[in-house]
Image 1 (tube, rainbow, N blue to C red):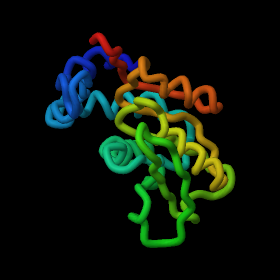
Image 2 (cartoon, rainbow, N blue to C red; image 1 turned 135 degrees about the horizontal axis):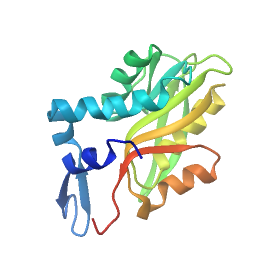
Image 3 (spheres, rainbow, N blue to C red; image 1 turned 90 degrees about the vertical axis):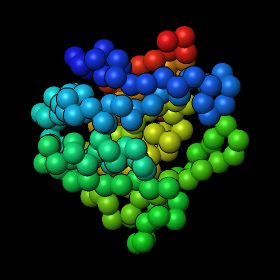
Length: 181
């Protein structure tokens, strides 16, 4: 967890029973609207990764872009979007992953990375881990080396971070929420 983790967590709004009864939705909108909190969020990532000589930030569509773009700028590396299927205009490679009810797919331009590029994968939240794991596998298949997967929020009760670690990828979260918080 980040040194600002407790503060960041305090700014995230919990919306009970959304999008369905029994779900506590973790809304990062107040975090983005608060300029001081947003700076601390980006600084949390910058301080963690500034000495790792990353080649690129691979940010997951769409909320991962919010953190990924300023982080790439601050670290002086490239920004690569990992998009939902059908959103990229050039030759792509894709990875399918399982959702609670069905499947989804993420894509990456086939020329996004060079063999051995050091990549940080960024998204807003890890729940079941499917999207993050699909992105990490896709980057690995493309020749990139995933240094770490990172997120603003981890929901450890849903087991996603554990799934990602079991697949051999490191996980960092600025903060986490259990179901009873």
